Every structure is written in C-alpha cells, then in structure tokens.
Image (cartoon, rainbow, N blue to C red):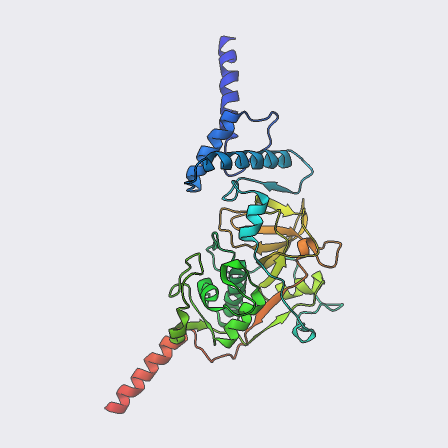
Length: 376
C-alpha cells in the first residue's frame, strides 16, 4: 500500500510537468498558481528570444502573458470550440499592440473592369473536392515570417506570383518581398506601414518582373533605398496582368483556388494565438485587415469545410504557419471577409519577355557555341 501512496503523487507531478508545454496549452481543472505561470513565462522568453530593456518592462509583459494564457486555457477547456489556441511569439502583446503592428493590409480598390469572368462559378461547373497547391509544388516549402514589419501585403503577393510562375513554367522560385517593401512606394503601398497585394501586382507588371529573395533578401524593415533599379538582369519572374475574383462569391473563389493560389484579405484581429483546427470566429465578416494567400481547400470530418491559408507569421504560428478557415459560410462575404477582395496574378504559358533561369542558361550556352563556330 505504501508504494501506491508514493506512486499517485509522482504521477500527478508528471502530469503537471507535461501540462507546461509551450507549444499547446491544454485546459486545466484548476487555475495555475503564479509560480507555474512564471515558470512558463521564463521558458517562453528563452524559446522566443525575448529580452526587454525598459525598466519594469519584463514584469509588465508578464502580466500580459498571464492574461493571454488564462484566456487561451478558458477557450481550450470548451469542448464545443472548433479550434485550439496556444502560446506563440505574440503572447506578450495586448490585442491593440498586435493589431497596430501586424495587421496592415489595405482593402484593394477595384473597378468593374477589374472583376473578370475567368473564374466566375457557373451552374454545372465540376470542381475538385479538395485542393492543396503545396502537394503540387506551387508553394515554397519554407513558411516566411514578416517579423515586426506590417508587410503582409508583400508576402501574399509574392506567394501568388511564385505559385502562378510554377504552374505555368514548372519552376518554383522564392521571390523577394523586400524588393516590394523598398521599391513599391507609390500612392498605395507604404512598406512596413501597410499596403495591398493588388498594387504589388501592378508594380511587378510595370517593373517588368521581380527578383528572387536570394539576390534581394528580406531584412524585416523598409529603411533602405531601393536596390532593384540596377537588378534588371536578375528579374527572374514576370506576370502579364492581374484580375479580381467575382466578389462575395465563395463558389467563384473555390473555382479560382482550384486553378491557382489566390490572395485575399481577412479579418485577423482575433487570430494572434490560433494554433490548430478550423477557425470559425470571432472576426468581422465585413472588413479585412490582413493579406494572406489561399493555397487550397478541403473538408474535415469533424469540423466541416475549410480554406487552407498560408500566413506570413512564420512556422511557429498556427498549423506550421497555416490557417484552416471556415468555408461555405452563410454570409456572402465568407467567414472573416475572405470572399470580399480576392485577387490573383495572370501569367500566360507563352510569356517569354524574361526567361526562367534554367532556360536562360541554356540560351547562353547555345549562344556561346554559335559564336565559337562562327569564329572557326
């Protein structure tokens, strides 16, 4: 009997230690004491590389962290929730701080001529039950992170261009968000302080292409002068135009996503600590504030239809950097306004004003051979 009395407390202690996981915060029957929360906080600080310099800032951030943790655990204790929340790099921020830094998407201006019939859903259209452009090789495997720069618009636009380029040429090339942040500084896009994907497409068209992030890497700020002016020979990808999916029409959006990744605006103010599952709110269904990229759709047996969305908050957020958002919502704009402003780039198969890197090398080799033969 003595052994059993010792074993029970040891098992209880083991369960408590397991519950301190920083990746997924599960529900607890009783409120955590302050010592437990402080232990989690210290572990979280190390994991996320946080170091506060201001006097009293660490303690102030601890209180915010504790409040966020309590809210997460209360949410996760509800068996009726369709998604789970968890700690991540945003767990020391208030809701206002998160919105002011990371939600800088702007609603795209549109005209009647922008909205095309290309992907308009018509009765009788047969669409696949599920699509995942990651499996088809049209999505860069590395989930990118915008950091403390409000450049979501650049990441969403670049992702769409990467996708359509791979679909039409067979080559997946990781492109430069930093070029857009530094160089697309007109009347609509403002670097880290906000912008829209549709205007980024316009810049790429006018600029005769965009360079790779290998030659123009991401810095996470927009304080440098544009370096792409002299990079005309390294513009590896072009697009021919851009169009808008018919608005407030999830079936047309589904048809579009079946053909290529699509940029959208969503209302993301309450998604800072999303961890997994199909997100069904809370959010505004009338207004978006964050540019993201839809790379597919599907259906969960337990949680229903969803959009598969690639975010730009790094792989530590959500499902490895991805969000599953409720699809077939009962409002025209879709859940979290996903169907309000979908846009996409156009690239024709015959587009050859810029050659892909492999074809370019082949052309150079052929040219050298012809020159050598001419000199003989």
